[in-house]
Image 1 (cartoon, one colour):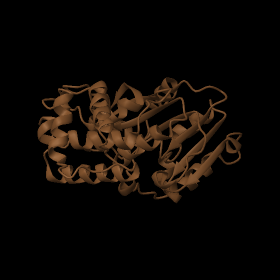
Image 2 (image 1 turned 180 degrees about the vertical axis):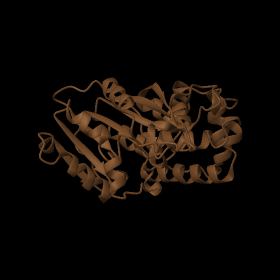
Image 3 (image 1 turned 180 degrees about the horizontal axis):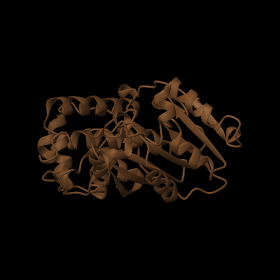
Length: 306
C-alpha cells in the first residue's frame, strides 16, 4: 500500500481551528506561534514585577499569557471581537484574569493612551509607521519591543548613506534609540506572512529633543521627497515655495511684522540655504545635527514648516 503522509498538526491553535476562526488579513493577523520567539521577546523587554505592559494586537493570547506571568498588569488592545473572546476564554477562571485589561477597538484611533511602562507587540504590518509615531510622541514609557516586517525594521535603524535610509529612519532616531534585536522567519507565524520579520527595541529619548516635531516632520518631508537631490533642488518646487510663503506671511501677521513689498520667497529660501552651506546637502547623507541646523536656520528667518 502507498504510504499516506501524516497530516501536520499545529500544536498551538488547534482549539482556534476547531472553532473555525479564519484569520483576517485586513487586520494583518499573523499569529506568532513559536514559543521560543515569544520567550525571547519577553526576555529582551526586561519586564519588572511592577510593570504595566501594553500589548497591541494580542490575537489568541500566546504572548499575552506569558507576559501576565511576569508583569503586574497587561493592557491588551484588540480590534477583532473574535480574538477578544478567545483571549478572555484563555484567562477565565485563572489568577491572570484580574491582571488583564482588554481595550476593544482601533489602537490608532484611541485619543489617549493608558499609562504603561513597556509595550510588547507583534505589530500588524500595515499600521507599523503610524503606530511607531503614536508611541514615540506619547513618550511616557521605558521601552517598546516590537515585531515588524524586516525591511521596515531595517529602515528604522538605517544610517545616513545607507540604501534604506529615509524619513522614517531620521524621524524615529530623533525621538528614540533604536536597536535591531533579532530576525524571525515567516514560518514562526500562522498563517505565514509573505515576508520575513525582525524584532526592534525602541527607547524614547529622555529628555526628548527640544524641537517642534511637526516642524521637523515638515522639513524632512520636503528633503526626502527626492532624497538624492540637493536641498536647493528640493526647495525649488512650486508647491513647497507656495506653502512656505503662506507660512511666512502668517508668521509675520501673528507677530505684527510687515512683509517687504519686494518679498520673494524663492530668493529668501536660496539665501538661507547658502548661508548655512546647506544648498548642496542631500537628504540621503544628512544626519540629525544637519537637519537641526537647517531647521533652526529657517525658523530664525521666520520660515516655518507647519
